[in-house]
Image (tube, rainbow, N blue to C red; front, side, top):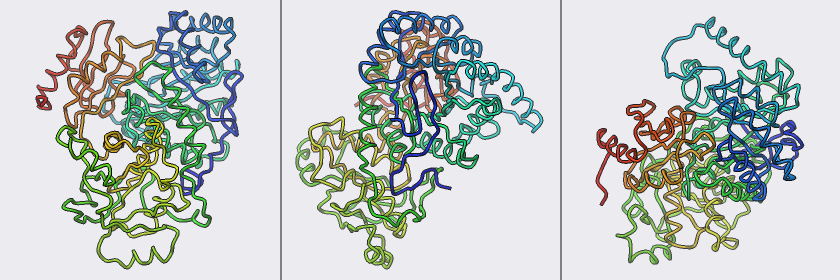
Length: 586
């Protein structure tokens, strides 16, 4: 079963309408933009100021952490102050571990976010087998804990987000389904069934991960499972790449994850999670929505709706092309995904290649033995079918197809032995050259989406004209999509009222000390809610354990505790050395 109406033609997924205060989501309503406060929930003045800044920037829903009953009770004061300031933006209480905090928050806000992995379940990384009877007993315990909140939300007209996060699944789910997209989906469905049994339907789903491939797979599987459950399971979807990080990397990861799902018509509300002041998330989210509404991936030609995909839809697997030698480099098969540049770009940077580090042009477009075809042409497809030796193939410029649909149709119709060169645009006449942020988001959505489909053996960025910037963007897309690792990868949460240190400053310090480490993944988490679980597959973790104190992790295991923050970055470096992952910077 497909997770969307068509892989080649845009059509927004049909969902029911959910109300969040006076705001409606889903159905034919606009896709809503939301963000989260970084201020301490007990600081009413700062929360109100930050909320007003977000609303002024275009935020439509504001989330606030409520880690304790005391914090949840202060939501009353925050809401009253906002109303007094003439602001009725819906507030969402973010709940982890404390059902009683959720019960209090439901008295004052328009929406409650719960995480099935820790709302009424344990997370101790225990390994054990659950019999069917034991599993059902656990579900009954969850039902008893969850039912009072559902009843209160139903009574008061409060909405809910059932939001699972990769890495924060309960031990019970982990032991049956693993830390997997399926585990994320099944965990959410358990809570949804309880809500439905109580005739409560004012809720949305989310499936967040810091790894775009995991995030995309989880949302696709969720929508498929909802379709299997029946037409009345058409609940709205909240999209987000959690702990995306900051700067270009954070924006690229968000564009790959959120942008690709929007391109397939999935999503009713989005949040871009950046390790920056929250107001800077809103322009990125708005730009992703504009890209989606522009429909640059749409397939205008009719007649291909039944063309079956030749790539896996839910489990990442790189397309099995054959290798060929191109200008002394291997392309295709399991070789590196190559970076191609126009000759003009190569000439512009040729004098400084030694200073460009990993950002090297590898192949020149004009020198390639490239077969350019229109994937709609039966004649051109037949010619490629007859080719016994692998050919480097791409979609011809100037045809009236959006690039995502065009390359999907190409790989669905030609033999897998032919490697593919991906392009971020097929229309050079409308190329944007003066807005790097816009070019970054569009290129990341298009190229990143296809890479996460397993499609592509080389990539060409042409939306961005600046030579150095286009090369950096190409490599950073490959890194963010997880198909070619050439630098340190950072998983950094976006900060909230639970955060125990300044995430932006700390992330900058850790980057300065470690950004030369190739292929090391470091998680920077403000509190134990996001660490260790949501660090997922990070190699090392820097996690707030208490005010001024840091815990360091190897994988998901805490190995050093209560380190004074002033010493923590140095101790992190020592930990990396101890595990033979350190190299001295050049």
